[in-house]
Image 1 (spheres, rainbow, N blue to C red):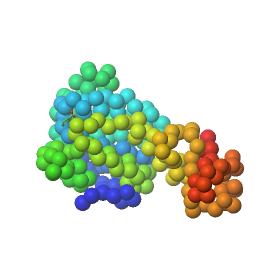
Image 2: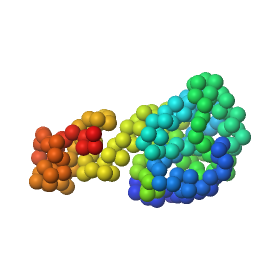
Image 3: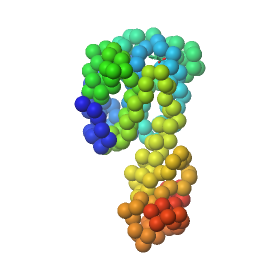
Image 4: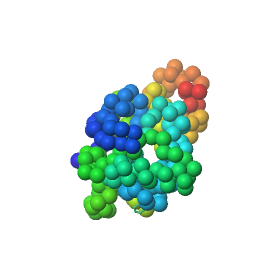
Length: 211
Ligand code: BEZ
């Protein structure tokens, strides 16, 4: 069954390149980014994993753990990791789930049979400290993802979890944000002491409150 925003992220136990783990226990009260790859030793995935490894410190700064998956076994992932380091200059520094029996792929609906019967699509799940799914993305095998976008979404998710704001199109950390319509002007004056500009009665903009 499809996993929807707000659902509890299914727990699982799996073999990974860093040993067996239970997902919820491994994640603890961090954020987590779980992403799937169609197959080992494929070109787009190779570039994605190198970039993910490069950005791991940026995920850590946001209290987020990253974990990849493909339906190949862990021994295959380990051999592939040498190529990833060779090509991208970045050693894979996070666990890669081996899922040859597709247990996790099926649990997370990562196989879309009309796209490919055998391989996972490029799924991304961002999961909050409460184990609830906060974002899902699905890309086809032919399109590599943008891992900077995942960091940007994490910034938005973490900000909007703590304040009554939403982030506008193309927002980046540090830019102005939108006060959610449920907050009255009167309350907005108290909650956002830096003030706000009402471009329309329903579109009120304020400086990012946690800076
Ligand atoms: C890739 O990662 O390069 C890839 C995987 C499956 C199909 C096409 C490309």
